[in-house]
Length: 383
Image 1: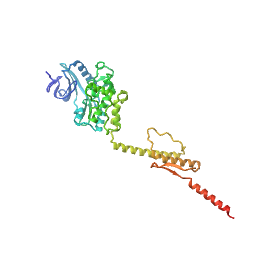
Image 2: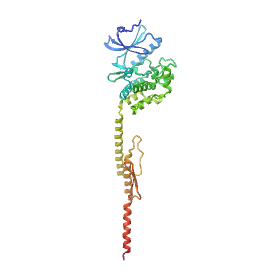
Image 3: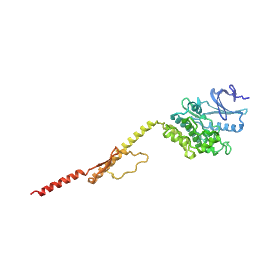
Image 4: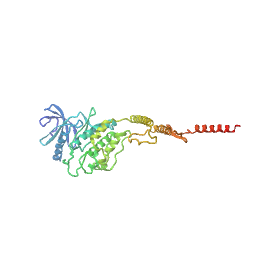
C-alpha cells in the first residue's frame, strides 16, 4: 500500500500536505517542517520504480550536489533522509510554477521575458559549473518561475560531477530527448556546453511556443538533435538575443558560449531594446561619430600635419561618409596654402546629396590674364 498521502509524517518531522508535482524519479509534496516551523517542498523517490538502488544513489547525489550550491537562482536544499527504503529530499518551497506550465498555458512568450529567464538560468548554471557540477537535464519543468519573475533552477537528480564520478553506465543516455544535446545523444559525456545547448532549446521553445525538435519517438527526436537544424526563430526576435540563442544551439560544443556565468552576465547587463530604439541609437551614433571626425579634421588642419596622410581608422569606430567631402576640401585648401599655389585644374567633390560637382577654380585667373594681354596689345598698336 502506498504510504505517500496527505497527513503522512516523513522522518518524524515533515508532515505531507498536497502533492504539487510528479517527475520521472518521484513526487514532490508540499509539507510542514514541524521542527523549524516552516513550509517546505519534499521530493520523495517513487517506491515502485524498478531501478530503485540506482535512482536512490542519484537522489543522494542531488542532495550532495545541490546542497553545495548557494545561489539565488538555485532552489536551496535543506535536508536529505531515508526511511524504510524511502529516500526523500527537503527543499525550498518556491512560490511559483514550472516554466513548462506557463508555456503550455500562454504559448509563445515575449523576448523580454525570455531574456530574463535565460539570464537567470545561465547564472545558476554558471554557479553549478564552477562548482564542478553539470545539470544534464535543463528543461522547462526544472525551471521554476515565481510571481515576481525570479527563476529557480531545480532537480539536479541526474547531475554528474565533471570529474566523472557519476553513476551513469558507459553509453547510457540520461536526460530528456527534447532538450538533449547532440553529444549526449551520441553517448558522449555531458559538459557545461551541453547545459547551454539545452538552455537554448528552452529559449527557442519560449519564443515559439513549440519544442524545436519533436519527432514521433525519443530516438528520432535525439537523432534530430544531432542532424537537423533548429526551425528559424520568429522575425521579431532580433539582435543580440537571436545571436545568443543560435550560438547556444550550435551542434559543436566548442561553438557555443564558453561560460554560462559570462552568458548570464551579458544577458543581464544589456537590456533588450526594441527595433525602433535600436534604429534611433544607431542614428545618434553615426551623428556623434561624424561630429567627432569633423572636429578631428579641424585639429589636423590647425596643427599643420601632412594633408595627404590619412591614418587608418580605428576598427571599432564606424566611418561617417558624410564628413569625408568636407575633410578633403579642408586638406586641399591647407595644402595649397602651404605651397602658395593655385589649383591647376577643376576640383571635384561629392556633395552631401551624393552628386559629383566640378569647381572651375581656374576661370577667374584665366580671365585676368586675358584682360592683361588685351590691354598690352592695344597699347602696342597705338601711334
